[in-house]
Amino acid sequence: MTEGEFRRIYQFVKGRYGIDLERKKEMIQGRLENFLRANGYGSYTEYMDAVESDITGAKEKQLVDILTTNHTFFMREFEHFDFLKQVVLPELKKKEEKKRDLCIWCGAASTGQEPYMLAMLLRDFFCFEEKPWDTKVLATDVSTKALQYAAKGIYEREQVTDLLPHWKHQYMHLVEDGVRYEMNPEIKEQILFRQFNLMDTFPFKRKMHIIFLRNVMIYFDKDTKRELIQKIYDVMEPGGYLFVGRTETIDRGALPLELICPSVFRKK
Ligand SMILES: C[S@@+](CC[C@H](N)C(=O)[O-])C[C@H]1O[C@@H](n2cnc3c(N)ncnc32)[C@H](O)[C@@H]1O
Figure 1 (cartoon, rainbow, N blue to C red):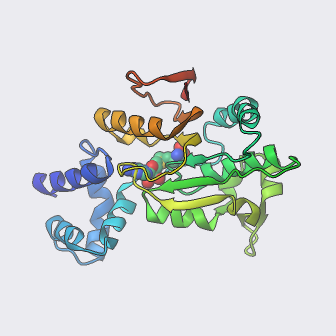
Figure 2 (figure 1 turned 45 degrees about the vertical axis):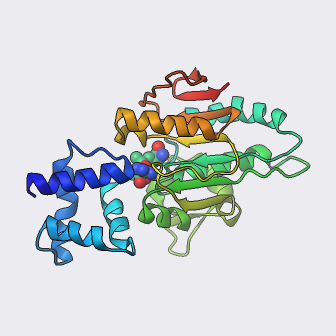
Figure 3 (figure 1 turned 180 degrees about the vertical axis):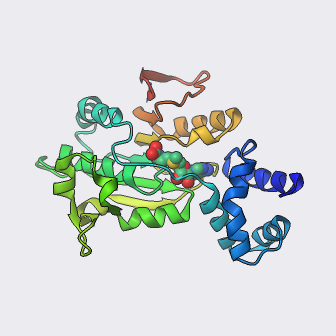
């Protein structure tokens, strides 16, 4: 990969998806090399010409699938789920008692573990209510492949080892092969999986009560992060909560976003 080819890929990905791969030349090369060879491309230039001239967008989607890092797992940063259960849901339940409708968005859903945990927690919390609550979770990601995996809702035994036993028994079942677990229909139905690039204009008509945007801004530079936080702030309901990854920092600027505890913010 020449320096020019590297810059072309880096600028393409950063310009469209915000993902900053400036110091990741080896990673790009490592992930693309075999793919190019297997698909008969003679060079990175030939490949990028094909990506950029493909009006269906399919080749670009494939590139995004290859270059995004979809690492996630059940029970990741579980303190956030405890906090939801102990503080956020009781508070929102009181506040929205009349409408019984919460808007929840998981903006980097990857292969689904995070939105499924949200759906299970919400089900636990609201299932004994006399009148039903609408607590659908909108789960988006830019990677087509990750979302396809997520929508299937099937996980290997090792992936669910650490899951709360109650969640595994109540909301999952063993598939016919006897080794993998699948989310039950009532949990799958709780989630709407959609492809969405966080760099695009937000199309949401309603304001969000809870936003999970964990471990994705680590791939963006400072300016991209600042612009994204502004957009996020704009779609939050007053009193709504934003959860970011435990190791992430955000520049709130002058935005009235209160830091409630590490990596949890509330719109005033
Ligand atoms: C490391 S995973 C984090 C998954 C999960 N939130 C967690 O904390 O375990 C980051 C995810 O962000 C997605 N992503 C990266 N850039 C994105 C963008 N511009 N728009 C939407 N999703 C993006 C990737 O496809 C990937 O699935």
